[in-house]
Length: 146
Length: 32
Image (tube, rainbow over all chains, first blue to last red):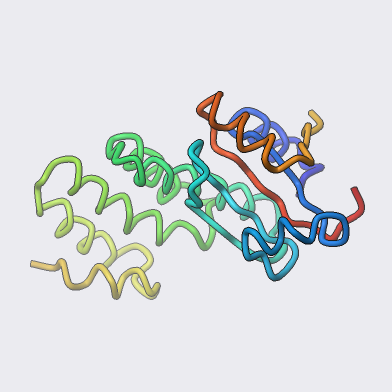
């Protein structure tokens, strides 16, 4: 996926990129509890892990995971507006693949956390009735139905 | 655009802290 110019540009513009090789830096694998390759970690600037995914992904799915990680990082710093925007863009992006239902769930949570309006959760539950209704995230959101 | 990977994890953590950018850490078995 790294030769993909879209992926390379996105990484360069949004992250400090670092690599550890299984044979050359086994201590880094142990330190971050990476048990398989590839494993990708997204850490916030303070070094706290915000997202992890394992196994090869094609470029569009890989890119979606990176965007999900940035949204999680925004949520972790309680930047609800930025988090909601990032999640919403992913949920509405037809190229986001498997990430989209999770993004739709967290977009609703972020809107609720930012506004205090429980209607944001009910609205999200309604949305799951027509989009991603078969996903595990729809089950999680179902408790918010009015 | 070629990604400028860092191999020093602690150095990358310091750079992330100083720049305010998140760190992408790739654990790989591929030739580097």
